[in-house]
Length: 590
Ligand code: FAD
Image 1 (cartoon, protein in one colour):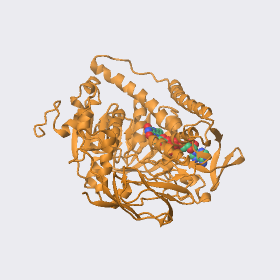
Image 2 (cartoon, rainbow, N blue to C red):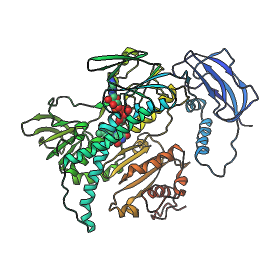
Image 3 (tube, helix red, strand yellow):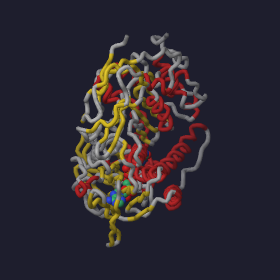
Protein backbone atom coordinates (compact mmCIF):
# COMPACT_ATOMS: atom_id res chain seq x y z
CA UNK A 1 0.00 0.00 0.00
CA UNK A 2 1.18 3.53 -0.77
CA UNK A 3 2.42 5.66 2.11
CA UNK A 4 0.12 8.26 3.57
CA UNK A 5 0.88 11.98 3.54
CA UNK A 6 -0.35 14.98 5.45
CA UNK A 7 -2.93 17.42 4.13
CA UNK A 8 -2.69 20.76 5.88
CA UNK A 9 -4.69 23.99 5.93
CA UNK A 10 -3.47 26.06 2.96
CA UNK A 11 -2.84 29.80 2.85
CA UNK A 12 -6.20 31.33 3.83
CA UNK A 13 -5.34 34.95 3.45
CA UNK A 14 -5.32 37.22 6.46
CA UNK A 15 -6.92 34.75 8.85
CA UNK A 16 -4.68 32.95 11.29
CA UNK A 17 -7.39 31.37 13.43
CA UNK A 18 -10.69 30.29 11.91
CA UNK A 19 -13.42 27.93 13.08
CA UNK A 20 -13.82 24.43 11.74
CA UNK A 21 -17.59 24.30 11.17
CA UNK A 22 -17.86 20.99 9.32
CA UNK A 23 -15.73 17.87 9.04
CA UNK A 24 -16.88 16.13 5.90
CA UNK A 25 -14.76 12.96 6.03
CA UNK A 26 -13.96 10.17 8.47
CA UNK A 27 -11.14 7.63 8.67
CA UNK A 28 -11.60 4.97 6.00
CA UNK A 29 -13.56 7.23 3.60
CA UNK A 30 -12.57 7.25 -0.04
CA UNK A 31 -12.30 10.74 -1.51
CA UNK A 32 -11.90 11.97 -5.05
CA UNK A 33 -9.49 14.76 -5.88
CA UNK A 34 -11.06 18.12 -4.95
CA UNK A 35 -13.69 16.54 -2.65
CA UNK A 36 -14.13 18.85 0.33
CA UNK A 37 -12.50 17.68 3.55
CA UNK A 38 -13.59 20.39 5.99
CA UNK A 39 -15.37 23.74 6.01
CA UNK A 40 -13.78 26.73 7.71
CA UNK A 41 -15.58 29.91 8.63
CA UNK A 42 -14.45 33.33 9.80
CA UNK A 43 -16.66 36.35 10.47
CA UNK A 44 -16.13 37.40 6.86
CA UNK A 45 -15.95 34.26 4.84
CA UNK A 46 -16.35 30.54 4.58
CA UNK A 47 -14.16 28.17 2.62
CA UNK A 48 -13.89 24.49 1.96
CA UNK A 49 -10.53 22.77 1.89
CA UNK A 50 -10.44 20.22 -0.92
CA UNK A 51 -8.49 17.02 -1.06
CA UNK A 52 -5.36 17.41 -3.20
CA UNK A 53 -5.68 13.82 -4.43
CA UNK A 54 -7.99 10.89 -4.80
CA UNK A 55 -7.33 8.45 -1.97
CA UNK A 56 -8.42 6.99 1.35
CA UNK A 57 -8.51 8.95 4.59
CA UNK A 58 -6.18 7.27 7.08
CA UNK A 59 -6.88 9.58 10.03
CA UNK A 60 -8.67 12.88 10.75
CA UNK A 61 -6.93 15.45 12.97
CA UNK A 62 -9.54 18.21 13.37
CA UNK A 63 -13.00 18.39 14.90
CA UNK A 64 -15.93 20.79 14.64
CA UNK A 65 -15.28 23.76 16.92
CA UNK A 66 -11.48 23.65 16.56
CA UNK A 67 -9.71 26.85 15.59
CA UNK A 68 -7.07 26.38 12.90
CA UNK A 69 -4.61 28.44 10.87
CA UNK A 70 -2.36 27.88 7.88
CA UNK A 71 -0.35 24.67 8.18
CA UNK A 72 -2.66 22.92 10.67
CA UNK A 73 -2.90 19.19 9.99
CA UNK A 74 -6.33 18.17 8.63
CA UNK A 75 -6.03 14.54 7.57
CA UNK A 76 -3.52 11.89 6.59
CA UNK A 77 -4.40 10.62 3.15
CA UNK A 78 -3.29 7.47 1.37
CA UNK A 79 -3.00 8.53 -2.22
CA UNK A 80 -4.66 6.40 -4.86
CA UNK A 81 -2.38 5.36 -7.71
CA UNK A 82 -3.60 6.89 -10.97
CA UNK A 83 -4.34 4.24 -13.62
CA UNK A 84 -1.83 4.18 -16.44
CA UNK A 85 -3.02 6.37 -19.28
CA UNK A 86 -2.55 5.64 -22.94
CA UNK A 87 -2.67 9.25 -23.89
CA UNK A 88 -2.52 12.31 -21.72
CA UNK A 89 -3.96 15.55 -22.89
CA UNK A 90 -5.16 18.75 -21.40
CA UNK A 91 -6.84 18.34 -18.05
CA UNK A 92 -5.41 14.88 -17.42
CA UNK A 93 -1.96 16.27 -17.87
CA UNK A 94 -2.73 19.18 -15.59
CA UNK A 95 -3.99 16.70 -13.01
CA UNK A 96 -0.75 14.84 -13.33
CA UNK A 97 0.95 18.08 -12.44
CA UNK A 98 -0.99 18.26 -9.21
CA UNK A 99 -0.26 14.60 -8.59
CA UNK A 100 3.42 15.31 -9.08
CA UNK A 101 3.19 18.15 -6.63
CA UNK A 102 1.47 15.77 -4.23
CA UNK A 103 4.63 13.68 -4.22
CA UNK A 104 6.51 16.76 -3.14
CA UNK A 105 6.80 17.77 0.51
CA UNK A 106 3.51 18.67 2.15
CA UNK A 107 4.33 22.39 2.24
CA UNK A 108 4.56 22.38 -1.54
CA UNK A 109 1.21 20.65 -1.79
CA UNK A 110 -0.36 23.24 0.45
CA UNK A 111 1.09 26.03 -1.68
CA UNK A 112 -0.12 24.38 -4.86
CA UNK A 113 -3.55 24.04 -3.34
CA UNK A 114 -3.90 27.64 -2.30
CA UNK A 115 -6.59 27.32 -4.94
CA UNK A 116 -8.74 26.42 -1.93
CA UNK A 117 -10.13 29.90 -2.00
CA UNK A 118 -12.23 32.01 0.22
CA UNK A 119 -15.86 32.47 -0.72
CA UNK A 120 -17.26 35.60 0.89
CA UNK A 121 -20.76 36.98 1.23
CA UNK A 122 -21.47 38.31 -2.25
CA UNK A 123 -21.36 42.10 -2.47
CA UNK A 124 -24.57 43.79 -3.65
CA UNK A 125 -23.24 47.26 -4.49
CA UNK A 126 -19.90 47.24 -6.31
CA UNK A 127 -17.94 50.34 -7.29
CA UNK A 128 -15.12 50.06 -9.84
CA UNK A 129 -12.64 52.95 -9.93
CA UNK A 130 -11.05 53.25 -13.38
CA UNK A 131 -12.53 52.14 -16.70
CA UNK A 132 -9.44 50.72 -18.41
CA UNK A 133 -9.28 47.10 -19.57
CA UNK A 134 -9.08 46.00 -15.93
CA UNK A 135 -11.93 48.18 -14.69
CA UNK A 136 -14.41 47.71 -17.50
CA UNK A 137 -13.84 43.92 -17.57
CA UNK A 138 -14.47 43.80 -13.83
CA UNK A 139 -17.56 46.00 -14.07
CA UNK A 140 -19.10 44.04 -16.94
CA UNK A 141 -18.39 40.64 -15.38
CA UNK A 142 -19.81 41.77 -12.05
CA UNK A 143 -22.95 43.14 -13.73
CA UNK A 144 -23.39 39.82 -15.53
CA UNK A 145 -23.17 38.11 -12.15
CA UNK A 146 -26.02 40.25 -10.83
CA UNK A 147 -24.20 42.97 -8.87
CA UNK A 148 -25.29 46.62 -8.88
CA UNK A 149 -22.26 48.21 -10.49
CA UNK A 150 -21.03 51.81 -10.65
CA UNK A 151 -18.04 52.46 -12.89
CA UNK A 152 -16.11 55.68 -12.19
CA UNK A 153 -13.57 57.32 -14.50
CA UNK A 154 -12.33 60.88 -14.85
CA UNK A 155 -12.10 60.64 -18.63
CA UNK A 156 -15.06 61.23 -20.94
CA UNK A 157 -14.64 57.86 -22.68
CA UNK A 158 -14.30 54.36 -21.28
CA UNK A 159 -11.33 52.13 -22.11
CA UNK A 160 -8.54 53.72 -20.07
CA UNK A 161 -4.99 54.03 -21.32
CA UNK A 162 -5.24 50.91 -23.46
CA UNK A 163 -8.08 51.96 -25.74
CA UNK A 164 -7.59 55.73 -25.70
CA UNK A 165 -3.85 56.38 -25.57
CA UNK A 166 -2.09 53.00 -25.49
CA UNK A 167 -2.46 49.60 -27.10
CA UNK A 168 -5.11 50.44 -29.67
CA UNK A 169 -3.96 53.76 -31.22
CA UNK A 170 -0.34 52.59 -31.18
CA UNK A 171 -1.21 49.37 -33.01
CA UNK A 172 -3.29 51.26 -35.57
CA UNK A 173 -0.29 53.47 -36.34
CA UNK A 174 2.11 50.51 -36.30
CA UNK A 175 0.02 48.86 -38.98
CA UNK A 176 0.36 52.01 -41.07
CA UNK A 177 4.12 51.93 -40.49
CA UNK A 178 4.28 48.28 -41.52
CA UNK A 179 2.44 48.92 -44.79
CA UNK A 180 4.74 51.85 -45.61
CA UNK A 181 7.83 49.72 -44.92
CA UNK A 182 6.52 46.72 -46.82
CA UNK A 183 5.60 48.83 -49.84
CA UNK A 184 9.11 50.26 -49.87
CA UNK A 185 10.64 46.80 -49.57
CA UNK A 186 8.60 45.53 -52.51
CA UNK A 187 10.84 47.17 -55.09
CA UNK A 188 13.24 44.28 -54.39
CA UNK A 189 10.46 41.91 -55.53
CA UNK A 190 9.92 43.80 -58.75
CA UNK A 191 6.95 45.90 -57.67
CA UNK A 192 7.59 49.58 -57.05
CA UNK A 193 5.29 52.11 -55.44
CA UNK A 194 5.77 55.83 -55.31
CA UNK A 195 7.04 57.33 -52.07
CA UNK A 196 4.08 57.67 -49.68
CA UNK A 197 2.36 61.02 -49.24
CA UNK A 198 1.36 61.39 -45.62
CA UNK A 199 -1.83 63.31 -44.91
CA UNK A 200 -1.33 63.66 -41.19
CA UNK A 201 -4.82 64.99 -40.45
CA UNK A 202 -6.38 62.04 -42.22
CA UNK A 203 -4.07 59.54 -40.55
CA UNK A 204 -4.83 61.06 -37.15
CA UNK A 205 -8.54 60.97 -37.96
CA UNK A 206 -8.38 57.33 -38.97
CA UNK A 207 -6.49 56.37 -35.79
CA UNK A 208 -9.10 58.26 -33.74
CA UNK A 209 -11.95 56.54 -35.57
CA UNK A 210 -10.58 53.16 -34.48
CA UNK A 211 -10.40 54.39 -30.87
CA UNK A 212 -13.87 55.95 -31.03
CA UNK A 213 -15.41 52.81 -32.43
CA UNK A 214 -14.07 50.72 -29.57
CA UNK A 215 -14.75 53.20 -26.77
CA UNK A 216 -18.24 53.85 -28.14
CA UNK A 217 -18.80 50.09 -28.16
CA UNK A 218 -17.84 49.94 -24.49
CA UNK A 219 -20.32 52.69 -23.58
CA UNK A 220 -22.98 50.67 -25.34
CA UNK A 221 -22.00 47.48 -23.49
CA UNK A 222 -22.15 49.37 -20.17
CA UNK A 223 -25.64 50.67 -21.00
CA UNK A 224 -26.92 47.24 -21.98
CA UNK A 225 -25.64 45.79 -18.72
CA UNK A 226 -27.15 48.64 -16.68
CA UNK A 227 -23.75 49.62 -15.31
CA UNK A 228 -23.97 53.18 -13.95
CA UNK A 229 -21.09 55.22 -15.37
CA UNK A 230 -20.02 58.22 -13.30
CA UNK A 231 -17.48 60.69 -14.62
CA UNK A 232 -15.12 62.33 -12.14
CA UNK A 233 -11.98 61.99 -10.04
CA UNK A 234 -12.56 59.27 -7.46
CA UNK A 235 -10.90 58.74 -4.07
CA UNK A 236 -11.70 56.43 -1.20
CA UNK A 237 -12.85 58.45 1.81
CA UNK A 238 -13.54 55.48 4.10
CA UNK A 239 -13.67 51.69 3.90
CA UNK A 240 -17.16 51.85 2.37
CA UNK A 241 -17.34 55.15 0.47
CA UNK A 242 -15.79 56.68 -2.62
CA UNK A 243 -15.95 60.41 -3.24
CA UNK A 244 -16.20 61.48 -6.87
CA UNK A 245 -15.35 65.08 -7.73
CA UNK A 246 -15.98 66.93 -10.96
CA UNK A 247 -16.18 70.65 -11.84
CA UNK A 248 -16.05 71.71 -8.19
CA UNK A 249 -18.92 69.40 -7.17
CA UNK A 250 -18.64 66.07 -5.43
CA UNK A 251 -20.76 63.08 -4.50
CA UNK A 252 -20.21 60.09 -2.25
CA UNK A 253 -20.96 56.59 -3.47
CA UNK A 254 -21.33 53.82 -0.90
CA UNK A 255 -20.25 50.26 -1.66
CA UNK A 256 -20.09 46.77 -0.20
CA UNK A 257 -16.98 46.11 -2.30
CA UNK A 258 -14.75 48.27 -4.46
CA UNK A 259 -12.33 47.31 -7.23
CA UNK A 260 -9.49 49.81 -7.65
CA UNK A 261 -8.39 49.85 -11.28
CA UNK A 262 -6.82 53.28 -11.57
CA UNK A 263 -3.89 52.18 -13.74
CA UNK A 264 -0.60 53.97 -14.18
CA UNK A 265 0.99 57.08 -15.63
CA UNK A 266 4.26 57.77 -17.48
CA UNK A 267 7.41 58.24 -15.42
CA UNK A 268 8.61 61.83 -15.76
CA UNK A 269 12.37 62.36 -15.97
CA UNK A 270 13.46 64.97 -13.44
CA UNK A 271 15.23 68.13 -14.53
CA UNK A 272 13.70 68.47 -18.01
CA UNK A 273 12.36 71.84 -19.19
CA UNK A 274 8.81 72.02 -17.82
CA UNK A 275 5.83 72.59 -20.08
CA UNK A 276 7.71 72.43 -23.40
CA UNK A 277 5.29 70.72 -25.82
CA UNK A 278 8.23 69.44 -27.87
CA UNK A 279 9.04 67.04 -25.00
CA UNK A 280 6.35 64.38 -25.16
CA UNK A 281 5.25 61.25 -23.39
CA UNK A 282 3.60 58.36 -25.26
CA UNK A 283 0.21 60.11 -25.15
CA UNK A 284 1.72 63.18 -26.80
CA UNK A 285 3.50 61.05 -29.38
CA UNK A 286 0.25 59.29 -30.29
CA UNK A 287 -1.40 62.66 -30.91
CA UNK A 288 0.75 62.95 -34.06
CA UNK A 289 1.08 66.73 -33.75
CA UNK A 290 3.62 66.69 -36.58
CA UNK A 291 6.31 64.49 -38.05
CA UNK A 292 9.46 66.00 -36.52
CA UNK A 293 12.52 66.11 -38.73
CA UNK A 294 14.68 64.71 -35.93
CA UNK A 295 13.13 62.78 -33.03
CA UNK A 296 14.94 61.46 -29.98
CA UNK A 297 13.28 58.55 -28.18
CA UNK A 298 14.54 58.19 -24.61
CA UNK A 299 13.98 54.57 -23.58
CA UNK A 300 14.59 51.41 -25.63
CA UNK A 301 11.72 49.45 -24.08
CA UNK A 302 8.60 48.28 -25.88
CA UNK A 303 6.68 51.57 -25.91
CA UNK A 304 9.72 53.62 -27.02
CA UNK A 305 10.59 51.22 -29.83
CA UNK A 306 6.99 50.99 -31.06
CA UNK A 307 6.81 54.78 -31.34
CA UNK A 308 10.28 54.88 -32.94
CA UNK A 309 8.98 52.41 -35.55
CA UNK A 310 5.95 54.61 -36.30
CA UNK A 311 7.85 57.90 -36.60
CA UNK A 312 10.70 56.36 -38.63
CA UNK A 313 8.15 55.04 -41.16
CA UNK A 314 6.43 58.43 -41.32
CA UNK A 315 9.75 60.04 -42.23
CA UNK A 316 11.42 61.28 -39.03
CA UNK A 317 15.12 60.72 -38.48
CA UNK A 318 14.84 58.82 -35.22
CA UNK A 319 17.52 58.30 -32.57
CA UNK A 320 16.97 55.93 -29.67
CA UNK A 321 18.89 56.21 -26.41
CA UNK A 322 18.81 53.45 -23.80
CA UNK A 323 20.48 53.45 -20.41
CA UNK A 324 21.05 49.69 -20.32
CA UNK A 325 23.25 47.71 -22.65
CA UNK A 326 20.48 46.29 -24.83
CA UNK A 327 17.04 47.12 -26.24
CA UNK A 328 13.97 45.59 -24.55
CA UNK A 329 15.66 44.71 -21.27
CA UNK A 330 14.34 41.42 -19.87
CA UNK A 331 13.93 39.75 -23.26
CA UNK A 332 16.45 37.17 -24.55
CA UNK A 333 19.17 38.74 -26.67
CA UNK A 334 18.81 36.30 -29.58
CA UNK A 335 15.19 37.43 -29.94
CA UNK A 336 16.06 41.13 -29.77
CA UNK A 337 18.98 40.90 -32.23
CA UNK A 338 16.93 40.78 -35.48
CA UNK A 339 14.84 43.71 -34.26
CA UNK A 340 17.92 45.72 -33.34
CA UNK A 341 19.40 45.07 -36.78
CA UNK A 342 16.30 46.18 -38.66
CA UNK A 343 15.76 49.21 -36.42
CA UNK A 344 19.41 50.22 -36.81
CA UNK A 345 18.84 50.36 -40.57
CA UNK A 346 15.77 52.57 -40.12
CA UNK A 347 16.92 54.83 -37.29
CA UNK A 348 19.63 57.43 -37.42
CA UNK A 349 21.20 56.22 -34.15
CA UNK A 350 20.71 53.63 -31.45
CA UNK A 351 22.80 54.58 -28.44
CA UNK A 352 23.04 51.92 -25.74
CA UNK A 353 24.56 52.21 -22.26
CA UNK A 354 23.92 55.93 -22.57
CA UNK A 355 22.38 58.40 -20.17
CA UNK A 356 20.61 61.63 -21.06
CA UNK A 357 22.08 64.22 -18.69
CA UNK A 358 20.04 67.24 -19.71
CA UNK A 359 17.84 68.90 -22.27
CA UNK A 360 18.16 72.59 -23.11
CA UNK A 361 15.12 74.14 -24.75
CA UNK A 362 16.24 76.45 -27.56
CA UNK A 363 14.08 78.52 -29.87
CA UNK A 364 14.35 76.21 -32.85
CA UNK A 365 15.25 72.89 -31.28
CA UNK A 366 16.08 70.92 -28.16
CA UNK A 367 19.72 70.40 -27.30
CA UNK A 368 20.20 67.10 -25.52
CA UNK A 369 23.37 66.14 -23.68
CA UNK A 370 24.48 62.53 -23.28
CA UNK A 371 26.92 60.45 -21.28
CA UNK A 372 27.81 57.18 -22.92
CA UNK A 373 30.39 55.32 -24.96
CA UNK A 374 29.11 55.93 -28.49
CA UNK A 375 26.80 58.91 -28.09
CA UNK A 376 27.94 62.45 -28.84
CA UNK A 377 28.21 64.85 -25.91
CA UNK A 378 25.37 66.90 -27.41
CA UNK A 379 22.89 66.62 -30.26
CA UNK A 380 19.86 68.61 -31.42
CA UNK A 381 16.35 67.36 -32.02
CA UNK A 382 13.00 68.84 -32.96
CA UNK A 383 11.11 66.67 -30.51
CA UNK A 384 11.93 64.28 -27.68
CA UNK A 385 9.77 61.35 -26.60
CA UNK A 386 10.34 60.25 -23.01
CA UNK A 387 9.39 56.57 -22.71
CA UNK A 388 11.25 55.41 -19.63
CA UNK A 389 8.47 53.45 -17.97
CA UNK A 390 5.21 53.90 -16.12
CA UNK A 391 4.39 54.19 -12.43
CA UNK A 392 1.24 52.92 -10.71
CA UNK A 393 -1.39 55.41 -9.53
CA UNK A 394 -1.50 53.89 -6.03
CA UNK A 395 -0.81 57.31 -4.51
CA UNK A 396 -3.91 58.83 -6.13
CA UNK A 397 -6.80 56.64 -4.97
CA UNK A 398 -7.18 57.69 -1.32
CA UNK A 399 -5.82 54.35 -0.11
CA UNK A 400 -4.82 55.83 3.25
CA UNK A 401 -8.44 56.80 4.07
CA UNK A 402 -9.44 53.12 3.93
CA UNK A 403 -6.25 51.69 5.45
CA UNK A 404 -5.23 50.06 2.16
CA UNK A 405 -1.52 49.28 2.02
CA UNK A 406 0.49 50.91 -0.78
CA UNK A 407 4.07 49.72 -1.24
CA UNK A 408 7.09 51.94 -1.65
CA UNK A 409 6.78 51.89 -5.45
CA UNK A 410 3.10 52.90 -5.41
CA UNK A 411 1.66 49.41 -6.09
CA UNK A 412 -1.19 47.95 -4.06
CA UNK A 413 -0.15 44.44 -2.96
CA UNK A 414 -2.93 41.86 -3.42
CA UNK A 415 -3.49 38.15 -2.80
CA UNK A 416 -4.42 35.70 -5.54
CA UNK A 417 -8.05 36.81 -5.29
CA UNK A 418 -7.02 40.41 -6.00
CA UNK A 419 -7.84 41.45 -2.42
CA UNK A 420 -5.80 44.18 -0.81
CA UNK A 421 -5.11 43.95 2.92
CA UNK A 422 -8.74 45.12 3.36
CA UNK A 423 -10.68 42.11 2.18
CA UNK A 424 -13.59 43.86 0.40
CA UNK A 425 -11.24 46.30 -1.36
CA UNK A 426 -9.76 44.74 -4.49
CA UNK A 427 -7.06 46.08 -6.82
CA UNK A 428 -6.16 45.04 -10.36
CA UNK A 429 -4.17 45.92 -13.47
CA UNK A 430 -1.28 48.37 -13.57
CA UNK A 431 -2.08 49.31 -9.98
CA UNK A 432 -0.84 45.95 -8.66
CA UNK A 433 2.57 44.28 -9.02
CA UNK A 434 3.36 42.31 -12.18
CA UNK A 435 3.75 43.25 -15.83
CA UNK A 436 1.82 46.35 -16.88
CA UNK A 437 -0.20 44.76 -19.66
CA UNK A 438 -3.81 45.08 -20.72
CA UNK A 439 -4.44 41.32 -20.90
CA UNK A 440 -3.20 40.89 -17.32
CA UNK A 441 -5.45 43.75 -16.18
CA UNK A 442 -8.58 42.32 -17.80
CA UNK A 443 -7.89 38.82 -16.46
CA UNK A 444 -7.45 40.20 -12.95
CA UNK A 445 -10.61 42.26 -13.40
CA UNK A 446 -12.68 39.17 -13.99
CA UNK A 447 -11.14 37.41 -11.00
CA UNK A 448 -11.90 40.37 -8.70
CA UNK A 449 -15.48 40.64 -9.99
CA UNK A 450 -16.13 36.95 -9.47
CA UNK A 451 -14.66 36.98 -5.98
CA UNK A 452 -16.71 40.07 -5.09
CA UNK A 453 -19.77 38.18 -6.32
CA UNK A 454 -18.99 35.38 -3.86
CA UNK A 455 -17.30 32.94 -6.22
CA UNK A 456 -14.26 30.89 -5.19
CA UNK A 457 -12.20 32.20 -8.07
CA UNK A 458 -8.51 33.04 -8.01
CA UNK A 459 -5.71 34.18 -10.31
CA UNK A 460 -3.82 31.04 -11.21
CA UNK A 461 -2.60 31.66 -14.74
CA UNK A 462 0.85 30.12 -15.02
CA UNK A 463 2.22 32.68 -17.43
CA UNK A 464 1.49 36.07 -19.01
CA UNK A 465 2.76 36.65 -22.55
CA UNK A 466 4.63 39.83 -23.60
CA UNK A 467 4.72 41.30 -27.10
CA UNK A 468 6.61 44.15 -28.74
CA UNK A 469 4.60 45.09 -31.85
CA UNK A 470 7.68 46.40 -33.58
CA UNK A 471 8.92 45.25 -36.98
CA UNK A 472 9.81 42.43 -36.58
CA UNK A 473 7.55 41.68 -33.65
CA UNK A 474 9.12 40.08 -30.58
CA UNK A 475 7.02 37.89 -28.27
CA UNK A 476 7.83 35.70 -25.32
CA UNK A 477 6.09 33.80 -22.55
CA UNK A 478 7.08 31.82 -19.49
CA UNK A 479 10.69 30.99 -18.75
CA UNK A 480 13.26 32.99 -20.71
CA UNK A 481 16.72 31.62 -21.41
CA UNK A 482 18.26 34.57 -19.58
CA UNK A 483 16.20 33.80 -16.49
CA UNK A 484 16.90 30.06 -16.72
CA UNK A 485 20.64 30.75 -16.79
CA UNK A 486 20.49 33.30 -13.98
CA UNK A 487 18.51 30.92 -11.75
CA UNK A 488 20.29 27.72 -12.87
CA UNK A 489 17.02 26.20 -14.10
CA UNK A 490 17.72 23.09 -16.20
CA UNK A 491 16.21 23.29 -19.68
CA UNK A 492 16.44 21.83 -23.15
CA UNK A 493 16.00 24.03 -26.20
CA UNK A 494 14.42 23.64 -29.62
CA UNK A 495 14.85 26.43 -32.15
CA UNK A 496 13.60 26.88 -35.66
CA UNK A 497 15.05 29.65 -37.86
CA UNK A 498 12.42 31.25 -40.06
CA UNK A 499 14.91 31.23 -42.92
CA UNK A 500 13.70 27.63 -43.33
CA UNK A 501 10.01 28.62 -43.26
CA UNK A 502 8.42 28.81 -46.69
CA UNK A 503 5.78 31.17 -45.39
CA UNK A 504 8.32 33.56 -43.93
CA UNK A 505 10.37 33.59 -47.12
CA UNK A 506 7.19 34.25 -49.07
CA UNK A 507 6.69 37.32 -46.90
CA UNK A 508 10.14 38.47 -47.94
CA UNK A 509 11.51 37.97 -44.45
CA UNK A 510 14.11 35.51 -43.24
CA UNK A 511 15.37 36.91 -39.94
CA UNK A 512 12.77 35.33 -37.63
CA UNK A 513 13.34 32.70 -34.99
CA UNK A 514 11.12 30.50 -32.84
CA UNK A 515 12.66 29.17 -29.65
CA UNK A 516 11.05 26.80 -27.19
CA UNK A 517 12.44 25.83 -23.78
CA UNK A 518 11.51 22.46 -22.33
CA UNK A 519 11.90 20.70 -19.03
CA UNK A 520 14.73 18.27 -19.98
CA UNK A 521 13.31 15.07 -18.50
CA UNK A 522 9.55 15.42 -19.03
CA UNK A 523 9.78 17.51 -22.22
CA UNK A 524 7.14 19.87 -20.80
CA UNK A 525 7.12 23.35 -22.33
CA UNK A 526 8.48 25.93 -19.89
CA UNK A 527 8.91 28.99 -22.06
CA UNK A 528 8.78 30.26 -25.61
CA UNK A 529 10.06 33.20 -27.57
CA UNK A 530 9.72 34.25 -31.16
CA UNK A 531 10.82 37.14 -33.32
CA UNK A 532 9.42 37.84 -36.76
CA UNK A 533 6.32 39.27 -38.43
CA UNK A 534 3.18 38.39 -36.42
CA UNK A 535 5.20 36.80 -33.60
CA UNK A 536 2.63 38.32 -31.24
CA UNK A 537 -0.07 36.12 -32.70
CA UNK A 538 2.07 32.98 -32.50
CA UNK A 539 2.86 33.33 -28.82
CA UNK A 540 -0.76 32.51 -27.94
CA UNK A 541 -0.27 28.86 -28.93
CA UNK A 542 2.79 28.56 -26.70
CA UNK A 543 0.89 30.23 -23.86
CA UNK A 544 -1.93 27.71 -24.13
CA UNK A 545 0.59 24.87 -24.34
CA UNK A 546 2.21 25.98 -21.07
CA UNK A 547 -1.18 26.35 -19.37
CA UNK A 548 -2.17 22.86 -20.53
CA UNK A 549 1.13 21.30 -19.43
CA UNK A 550 1.89 20.26 -23.03
CA UNK A 551 5.20 18.68 -23.94
CA UNK A 552 7.32 18.72 -27.07
CA UNK A 553 5.45 15.76 -28.57
CA UNK A 554 2.08 17.47 -28.08
CA UNK A 555 3.36 20.45 -30.05
CA UNK A 556 5.23 18.46 -32.70
CA UNK A 557 2.43 15.94 -33.26
CA UNK A 558 -0.27 18.61 -33.54
CA UNK A 559 -0.88 19.11 -37.25
CA UNK A 560 -0.26 22.76 -38.03
CA UNK A 561 -1.60 24.28 -41.27
CA UNK A 562 0.95 24.65 -44.05
CA UNK A 563 2.35 27.05 -45.00
CA UNK A 564 1.98 29.18 -41.90
CA UNK A 565 4.30 30.77 -39.42
CA UNK A 566 2.59 28.62 -36.77
CA UNK A 567 4.49 25.64 -38.14
CA UNK A 568 7.66 27.13 -36.68
CA UNK A 569 6.33 26.20 -33.23
CA UNK A 570 5.82 22.57 -34.19
CA UNK A 571 9.22 22.50 -35.85
CA UNK A 572 11.02 24.05 -32.88
CA UNK A 573 9.40 21.30 -30.76
CA UNK A 574 10.56 18.67 -33.26
CA UNK A 575 14.05 20.15 -33.18
CA UNK A 576 14.05 19.52 -29.43
CA UNK A 577 12.64 15.98 -29.82
CA UNK A 578 15.09 15.14 -32.62
CA UNK A 579 12.28 14.26 -35.05
CA UNK A 580 12.55 17.27 -37.34
CA UNK A 581 12.80 16.69 -41.09
CA UNK A 582 12.74 20.32 -42.23
CA UNK A 583 16.23 20.90 -40.80
CA UNK A 584 19.22 18.56 -40.68
CA UNK A 585 20.47 18.21 -37.13
CA UNK A 586 22.95 15.32 -37.30
CA UNK A 587 23.39 14.99 -33.53
CA UNK A 588 19.69 14.87 -32.70
CA UNK A 589 18.44 11.67 -34.31
CA UNK A 590 16.04 9.52 -32.34
P1 FAD B 1 -5.65 51.93 -17.31
O1 FAD B 1 -5.86 51.46 -18.68
O2 FAD B 1 -4.49 52.81 -17.03
O3 FAD B 1 -6.98 52.65 -16.87
C1 FAD B 1 -7.08 53.32 -15.67
C2 FAD B 1 -8.25 54.26 -15.74
O4 FAD B 1 -8.45 54.80 -14.46
C3 FAD B 1 -8.05 55.44 -16.68
O5 FAD B 1 -9.14 55.54 -17.56
C4 FAD B 1 -7.98 56.65 -15.76
O6 FAD B 1 -8.58 57.78 -16.34
C5 FAD B 1 -8.78 56.17 -14.58
N1 FAD B 1 -8.41 56.78 -13.31
C6 FAD B 1 -7.21 56.75 -12.69
N2 FAD B 1 -7.28 57.35 -11.51
C7 FAD B 1 -8.54 57.80 -11.39
C8 FAD B 1 -9.23 58.50 -10.37
N3 FAD B 1 -8.64 58.84 -9.23
N4 FAD B 1 -10.53 58.80 -10.58
C9 FAD B 1 -11.15 58.44 -11.72
N5 FAD B 1 -10.54 57.76 -12.70
C10 FAD B 1 -9.27 57.44 -12.53
N6 FAD B 1 -0.50 46.70 -22.99
C11 FAD B 1 -0.70 45.58 -23.71
O7 FAD B 1 -1.06 44.55 -23.14
N7 FAD B 1 -0.50 45.57 -25.07
C12 FAD B 1 -0.09 46.65 -25.73
O8 FAD B 1 0.09 46.62 -26.95
C13 FAD B 1 0.13 47.84 -25.01
N8 FAD B 1 0.53 48.97 -25.64
C14 FAD B 1 0.66 50.12 -24.94
C15 FAD B 1 1.06 51.26 -25.60
C16 FAD B 1 1.21 52.45 -24.93
C17 FAD B 1 1.62 53.68 -25.66
C18 FAD B 1 0.95 52.49 -23.53
C19 FAD B 1 1.09 53.76 -22.76
C20 FAD B 1 0.57 51.35 -22.84
C21 FAD B 1 0.43 50.15 -23.54
N9 FAD B 1 0.05 48.98 -22.90
C22 FAD B 1 -0.10 47.83 -23.61
C23 FAD B 1 -0.19 48.93 -21.44
C24 FAD B 1 -1.70 48.97 -21.16
O9 FAD B 1 -2.25 50.10 -21.75
C25 FAD B 1 -1.95 48.97 -19.67
O10 FAD B 1 -1.29 47.88 -19.08
C26 FAD B 1 -3.43 48.86 -19.37
O11 FAD B 1 -4.15 49.93 -19.95
C27 FAD B 1 -3.66 48.84 -17.88
O12 FAD B 1 -5.02 48.71 -17.65
P2 FAD B 1 -5.69 49.19 -16.29
O13 FAD B 1 -7.12 48.83 -16.40
O14 FAD B 1 -4.92 48.71 -15.14
O15 FAD B 1 -5.52 50.77 -16.26
